Structures are given as structure tokens and as C-alpha cells.
Length: 331
Image 1 (spheres, rainbow, N blue to C red):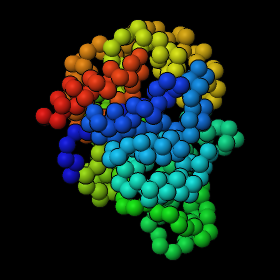
Image 2 (cartoon, rainbow, N blue to C red):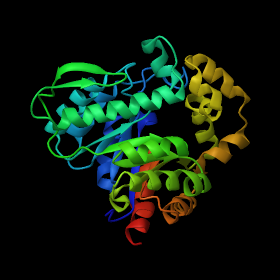
Image 3 (cartoon, rainbow, N blue to C red):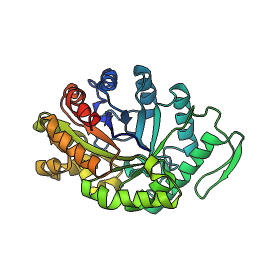
């Protein structure tokens, strides 16, 4: 059974020339329950010129910290950039080096990362089927003690075997942006990872996930419902400027099917400050963010990950350490 509400931090947009590894130990000391890193080869915006290789970063982050779990949110083992066996090897190696500290988040992908490798951009149905099959393959690679033949619809491998296996269980967080994907998350994932408004999570995504999990004979009480939200603490103008530079193009739904980060960035020019304020949780003080997080907690979210676009990561860490994390520890 999920014991308590957790708070995680996605530090992907700190990974530039100034803000990167030095803050990870401070995040651990602040009391976060998890740290997360995105997995892109092309960034959402061309201006974000720090699209790091996540598997190298995870190892470096684990070495610089001591206990905090580290996750990828999310990788895409659908046979484009990554064959599922390669993801299994990466995770198996990391988990053997840092037991109990590696989380695997998986998703069906975006065109900017996958189209160039697949040679085409599959329909959502094909991508979600590929992802479900990949998760099943990864689990077998983690578990099987003798080589086996895998004969799926999308992946086939003879004498498949993972020599460096995880030490202990590696939880798989299955990403879902809507109720159909949430159904797959309930069937194939250990936990749900999602995003969206409080109302959308409460009324559509959580129910679909829970129903599918129960129908798959899983104990929903042991499954986390993770929600990612994006925002900033402190200076709103500085946060909006950063969001415009790195991320605002994601507010246009069609851009998930666009492979060119330059075009995505250019399309963001049509996004107004008001739209940014409506879609990112930007608060000058910690109280405002506490209210937002608490609304998600009250609908059944068990683990919330905050993606930070603050002008000052130091301020974010301090606010969580002194005010936000203590508030939720007392509930």
C-alpha cells in the first residue's frame, strides 16, 4: 500500500552551463523523494542546447547523491532510438550499481525524438502497442534466468538474455496523457505517470487506470498515481521568459507530431503570457504552490513531480526544504 504522499523534482531544465550537477546533493538534503531527468535527443526548443544523454546523467547523478531514487521521465523503448533490450541493459546496469534507486519511466514518444530513427511517425495505436510489448519484453529480460526467444508483433529476438540484471525490483512508471493510454498503464505498468489538470486527472485518467489495473488483478493500493506539473517559484517575468525560450511550444498539441525543434520554437511565438500563466503553475511564494500540490493530493495523487522553470534553482530548493516538503510531511 502506498504509505505517504511523495514529492519529486524534475531538474531537466537546470541542465545548462550554470545549473546542473552541483544542485543534486542539495535536492537530496532538502528532502525530495525522487529526482527525474527527461530523455530527448532533440529538445522541444532549439534554444535549449543541452539535450543530454540521460543514461550518462543518471549514473553521474547517482554517484553524486547517496540515497535518493532517480528516474527517467520518460524513455521510449518502441524501437526507434531504443530497442527494449538496450533500455533493459541500461537500467539493469544502473540498478546493479545503485540498488533500489533507479526508476524507469516509459512512454510512447514524440516525433522530435523518434521519427528520424523509425523512418516514419507511427499512429498512436501502433506506438502504444509497441510500448506495451516493449514493457513485457523488458520485464522478461529482468526476470528470466536462461536465454529465451521473444516473438512479439514488433520485436523478435532469439536467445534473449540480460547478463547484468537489476538488484531488486525496478518499478516501471507507465506514462499516459489520456484515458486510453491510462488503460494501458493499468494493464502493463507498476505505476501511472500522467499530467493535466486536477479535473482531468480525477475524472478521466485516474479512473481508467484504476479500472484497468483491477481488471488485470493488480492491487491498486500499491500502485502510485504520479502527476507531473510544470511551473516556477519567484519572479514570474523571468519564469515566463525561460518557458518561452525552452518549452512553450508544447502548449500546441500538434507539436507532438512535429519533428523539427526549430519549428516548434517558432510556433511558440503565438503563445501569450496569459496562456503560459494558465498552463504553468507560477507562484511568487511557496504558499501558492502548496495550494496547487494539495489539490492534486486530495484527488488521489500519491507522487507529484514538479518540473522547475524558476530563474533561481537555489530559491526553489530552499522553498521546498523550508516550507513545501515540511507541510506535506505533517499531513
